[in-house]
Image 1: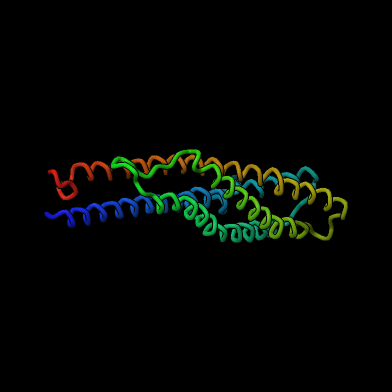
Image 2: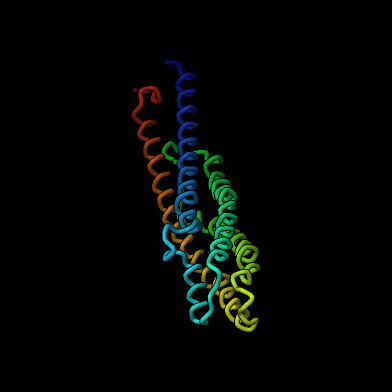
Length: 220
């Protein structure tokens, strides 16, 4: 086999390696958002697991007031339906930021491979969290806060409506949002670690084939 053919095989092997790492990144990100994050945002399988619904009902009970269950279900359905539409843009941020390191990778030594370290995720996750917080806050405001008064019948006195709705608004805009972002943070950290390991495995596979393939080694 001549030198030109060997170099062609090496280049093809290298491109296949980069594509495999890109695919690992994309699959990792899809799993993060379409499985882990979506699970936190979509309607829970049981009403007892619905943090917002349980809190609103608990506040109403504490104030000895009945709220309209159908209206609450509709508000929460609209909130969840809207917030889920942001998932593609969050995925795009993560993939576009991390794929820069993959696309620009150019080995200086024979043993060089693409690597991700925990510090590589710090600026990305800071940007992602800021974006997600802004998006979720906006949807909470538009779909829940602005519709809280729809939960009450005309029979309830205005002062009672004001007291309960203020507590509801404070909960979704502060406590709930904080808890949700912390839960997402945890999911992100786990997936970051999985990605680091997955990319390392791709690198090990690349080097093993590179060093042991007869097609890629003119000396063998």
